Image (cartoon, rainbow, N blue to C red; front, top):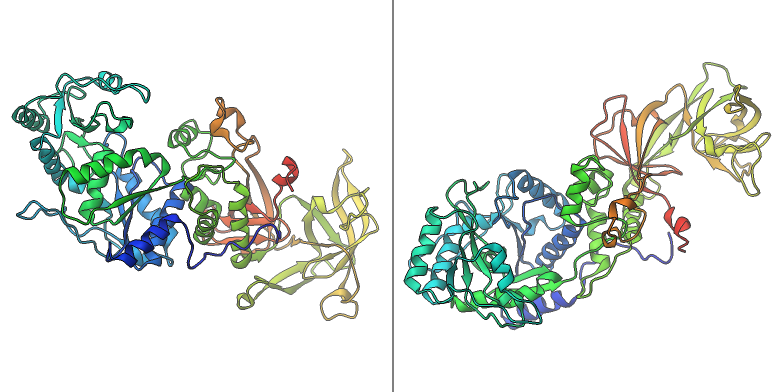
Length: 593
């Protein structure tokens, strides 16, 4: 292990400024039980940035004996789909399984009730197999009632400005906005127009409901922000019941309130939205306690992109093989690549929670991957670039089996039988006719140990008409097998191999970093920095135990890299995705130590 990288195991009691606030609120009695939430918009697939937020929200619930709600922020039906809802639920369950799944809370049957006094309340339920996540759309009726309250209080009005006119009227940070001509409409007229908006009388974009706050506020988000807009679009959850939909800033805090969320944790770009979050809760005179919003810096990871728009472009332009392409930072892409949930959680804990945006070196993630896989992955032998070796002193029908350990880090992993025959395959890179100094692998007249087997000596090199090496003829020292009289003979080089008679052919996909520069999103022509070598496909020779692995099984191909079996494989023709190399190959390319 590189001593510059400390172990990335998950700490039981991490510390950061948000956890300090939570601990203080519990100690002072401000909250009785911690309730957090993870509220993605179902308009795409989750990525590793979301994983950081998931680990934070569920981690806090886990550490403080609280609960965390999984809620779909589904207030924009033009971009959302049930496909993404299902994918998000699956990804979240996978990431927290066995770690914080006891903190996951789904919604009860039905939408949020409204009691006779007009107060809203919600009681969550445990994560049964058929339970559904919370949906902001479950609260559409409640949110509509909140909007009516604001209108009646003179704090919201119907505006006839077009979207472009509305944006222009907000001004800029260095100059105040221009009040809408309809800002002082009478309450009754606003109530009538809002009812007609809901009834579907007006086309999209012709009217909005806006909060009445302060058009001269230094915070642009308080300059009469939009609360509702017209969208004659069917909703994936609500169907055709609505043609007006709340904006995120309106639905966010009120959904938190309905669900009893105590600590609403967002990424840093929502810090300027917090005054609006608080204004809505306070202006509605809601019974206490009220949720509080906290912000932290989002994850920016090197050598990839996190923008949903850019990720979608990579998929739609077929620059990758779908949303689960192992080169993408999506959770399902990482999962297909072979990254474990434990490694992602350890990574999220290790990078910490701060208020400062920065770029996280992808090597930190890769270190977490290697550390976890070293402990858990089964060892196997596979040859990616095969060179045939004939052991001429063995008979043609020779075959024996050697014991090979499944994982030296886990004594309980046991051993397996590894067949050995007269003809084997080794890596082409493990032989050189004219090697450089300190080349301790195979050379003409040289010896090398075959791992788990015996020492062999290269006696003859066979070439084709083009002068290419196609076969090595060697002799095997069977007395150097474990327990043999020559077993203690010292040889500097040890290489891996596969018995040719028993080898299974496999498609091996050698994935690498998707981009050649650390911050592609900062580049105007970001697509020009796609790594042309981010995927190579080879046909490997594998030991027979790899003939029919379950999809997602993780292995270390000894001396090569970590791999995961892919669902594209079939019995006798497996497919493996390279998860991560055994060592950081990029540090040599970039000159980093």
